[in-house]
Length: 205
Length: 253
Image (cartoon, rainbow over all chains, first blue to last red; front, side, top):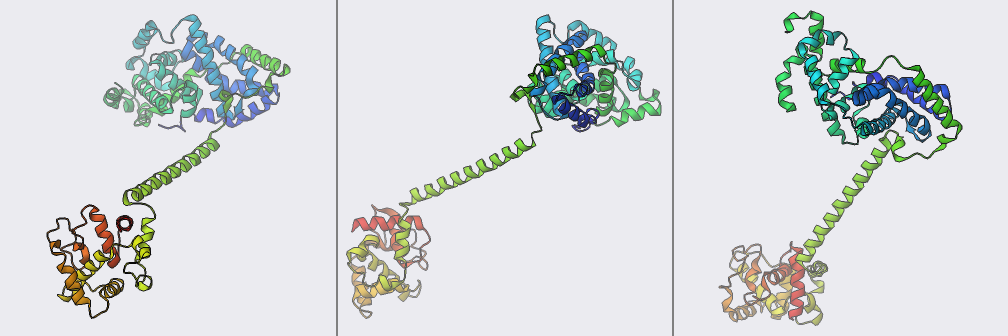
């Protein structure tokens, strides 16, 4: 599935991001701020998908480490997204270990299923999805699918980069993202998507 | 359900059909990516950057996990390495197969010995009991016997004429061209048991391998010796067995 299409939004800024990172590595403070603003939205969205409300704190921790280790980094804008996502993920996993909170609790999942029926979400979904509802939907997925979708769609990584962040094979991550998006599409409804439902369910089981 | 929707929404849904991705992806991405950034958090990050820079931390060594450069060059190198490895494997396997052919067929220099034996007659004419000739030639008696069979077959109408080497050998053995018929009659009278030999692969194929039947008593050496003897008259094609035959006959002399 479209590896080029998904991260297009992020890739549009990858050149700019790469330049900013390069200048920041030479000590340019303003360039570091530019890189922050380009990366932080996706990173924060990803962290929200993993750790929920603690995402801001975890992101702060991650940025401390990013700022400290920036000199070690080598790569372009897309690489910087992957590198920062890896750091953020490690911080998030540390956080979850400390909190002993799993990224998706049973109670939340039940709420999401109640909230996210096709009838209640469809009209709203095609206009704009609220952040809360979108996060609920994503977090209702199995964890590996949720993370794959977040890295691919929200952070804007390509398949191999997402796989490197997750420490898995690219094929496994691609499958997980594919299934996750299928489920989300099914929940979000829509005529074209609804027609696919039988096949979707048959394949994903 | 689809009936209720306006054209716009239906089209939006249909655009996702087959892919189901673009709509879902952009919905999720727009919603989950945070649009309002906390400037305090940004300031903290920039402050951390400044502190690290001023402390000289940015000169640190790049670890493997910090290297996110595109992998194109590495991929090219890997594909080169794969190509090299595969070709090396092919060569190795091919060599093993070739060596296996040799080891089954006989010593590697057997083929060369045979090649010499099929060379023009000049060197082979004074062949009779010479010790040097015996090294890579079958026993002369068997030879002449085989030649005689070929000769007789030719006389009876079927069978290929003897090639010059064999013919010269036969003449030499008989002590003259005129003596050949008598010589052959005598030779073949001594070996009446030729016909019942069980393992004569070329008996029916007189035209191409007329001397096939010439080795009834050589049961211990087997077929290979047989063939080797044949090759002296025929143009051999089976190098492996030929070489073996040359060797075996040399020892038996």
